[in-house]
Image (cartoon, rainbow, N blue to C red):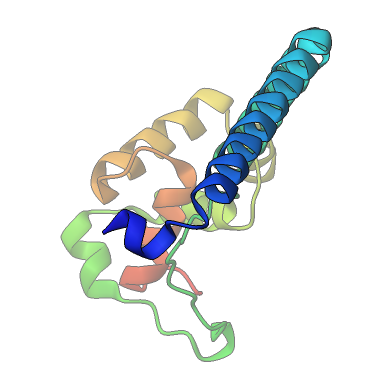
Length: 156
């Protein structure tokens, strides 16, 4: 069958296939010699590409901005028509002096400034503060002020 189809062209096909094989061999050798001649440059380029890709990947993963969502209740200032919740004051057992200390804390005064304003010692203010923290079940001044505003014993 091969002779029927390609009988007269057998020599031409053989010659063409041998030229194609020879050309392929020459190109392969040229490429191989090219790589051998420039091996250090190719290795340096490969290492540079690897480090570039690694740097881009690290930059994308390490420098992502961290978004923190904070939900906080915002109280509207209604100090001119404020009515103190006396029931909660009685339930918690907060004295008038402790209430004064709490209001001065809400103004942002330090313990020393509160002591000077009320003409008492610093230890007295610390005692009132610790009693307030116990009664309001908090551990910080800011928490005490926030809870007091929320339950209506100091103006917002």
